[in-house]
Length: 102
Ligand code: FES
Image (cartoon, rainbow, N blue to C red; front, side, top):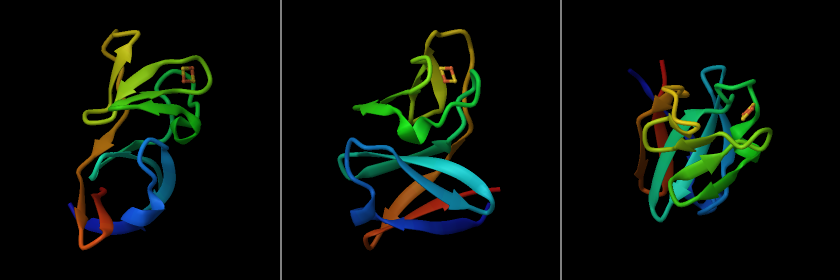
């Protein structure tokens, strides 16, 4: 899968979800210390914008009804019923954030 540069690390504040677009996809970046994780922006419940949600550690809460995701995997942990959003491999190189997108 090709990796695309989607942001500078400095533009992804720790603890605040950040919306980016890559290959026509809307992704939410979540910075946890110096790691960055990438998931699809649209919540699996009713499509709420996860990039406008609240990030606590690796947990990202949807702003619409509070479903909560583990940004490392895209797995919905509240309510834990097997829902998930797509997650994409992300890495930081030389201060730039790269994400593997289809
Ligand atoms: S749309 Fe995200 S919790 Fe409902």
